[in-house]
Image 1 (tube, rainbow, N blue to C red):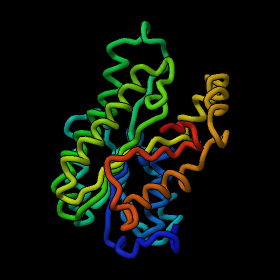
Image 2: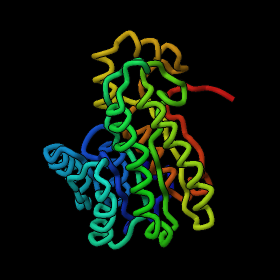
Image 3: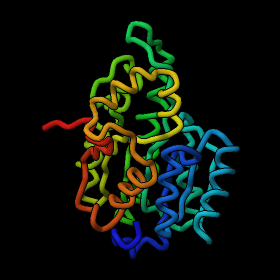
Image 4: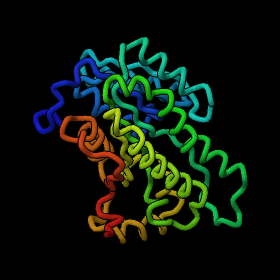
Length: 260
């Protein structure tokens, strides 16, 4: 993205990316380190974190990367991750709430309380906890929050009752935080992506007909690239060019949710 978006203020900035050890989260981390932004990446898999750190450091010489083993469902995790990030990098400018556990697709009548608890604890509750823990630091830097929504919620995808409703709760939280934190010059937006990831590949294997139907409804008829499309959008939202947008959902989905 260099040369296209003014990130001249990015050296010295730092970001937290939950679920940054793989998939879309790792792609966002790659986009950030290429802009000179230090990154804390969290994951529940130490092996994924170790591999991600090596990849990021080999991508950009001198990249500042701090991997932290942390489960988004842990109520104390957000506070600790924010503390460690500020201790290591001296500040916090960007929070990307990307981590999300996903249970199997089921009709509503087959969903269990555990299915909902997993989706909401790792999703909207974790997003809220990280936002609250990061708030004083983001206030100091006039920072950026980016939350991950999903077309499963926006488009009311069948058999996604726990996951999709949780993602819509995240979008609602995003809009409320944008209202409350605007006076602090903190921008809060959501991204609803449809790009290749570990989750999209798993879903394609398990539900090929459902994926084909989803792509058929998309204007571009394909998945996007996680680093170029989602990572690039995150870089934009954190740049001066993107800092007059707040409370919005950016549908990075190839025209999969064209609506008024």
